[in-house]
Length: 609
Image (cartoon, rainbow, N blue to C red):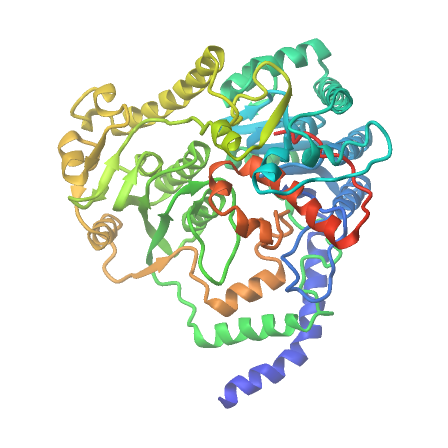
């Protein structure tokens, strides 16, 4: 107890020392070439984040802050290039135009901007077209399919529940109230929606054409030819390279030298150090010191366990003291890379308990396993289920362990949508669709696929399926007891059946896998470590307060609090989230009108996606 109090008191003494140390570290790296890295995740808030009390809804980078930091990087002689990492939705329409302008200024100043992405949406592509080079992970996708939007009309719903709307407006085109008054748009509203969409579409086409140095007609041909796999996007000229994050990093090192510094917090006004103006910095240091005081550092040989637990999805997810659901590609990749680099780790077990998920995320994890395998002994241990994407991430291992009752296999690809229009019609809600681009609404929930859309979706799925089967045949080779097409096709097996078919190698538990790989690494006395090391409640809270890890810090996250409308639509949200979002916005207007009496509100603009 006395020791802990001494540590706490020592914090006050160490704070200035830590600040000086950080400043010295900055000076030491100042002479090295720097690449400023900006991670884009979710929407950009227009209002700058409050630097005060940190429990106000999560850290989020503002649009203003991003522009300032990009400009600073553009004018800093130490910064040799800028990297944009795409891990989610992009900026808004107007924000995209402004960011493109900043990107143009940076490039005119003689600096390159590089983009690396897992998946690219239409709006993201408009932004990234202004970069010097766009690269995409293998099996990534480019959804340059145009614009699709819908405007809701809830008059039928109001009639059904006995509510009579009664609104007054000024101006024929002041159509904000039409969503409550009508079951479809007025001629004026429809005309307005079309000219708005025409303008946005033309802007997008011209921005892409200018950025990629092609004609607007070619851009429109790209749009009508989408969506694209990574390989087809490169062939068509939409992207410049198809590569994993590791290869992208190596490309930058070859270009700017192995001493290049990747600054993930460039221009952050708080810098890479803790914000000592906040009292929580004290707790962070205290927690770190207590942790170091209670843990013994050891270079003892270890077997690392990296988990792929739950549905596989792209990105890094978000830390939560209540636990995190699913396996996120960024976190699993980082864990595998950490295990590969740590000299004290001599062997690695990938524990897979997943029904699968994102094809792109599965490919990213598979690639990371191959890097581990090239350096260290590596095996896979399957849990209750390791099917589809769960098998995808596992198949690189020379030895796969499974229990007899493990559910595995399911080598195949699935896609599709729920057509919800009849459900909405029963509720008295109708939608008027607007689109530009032959395939812009390919995934919308209003109607079934047309024959052409079905053909395009099938071709896209076939490409991914071919990659999946190719990985299995290339890695498993002669172990397979039947031709791959007789094993794949979505077929599901138990671990016992999979062993007979050559899809797994041994029946055994996690402990069996650990003992086996330790023996292969010739380890007799070793520790078993989980990578990344699990964090307790306090550590997770403190990590959130300090901004998280380098790659996760300052990530732009979608936020918001639960509203009454959320509670009113708990089931519909899972069925048709895009339309529910629009309905929520419409119903929120009624609440605002009830509070204010008079509002100055523009009409609901068709939501592009």
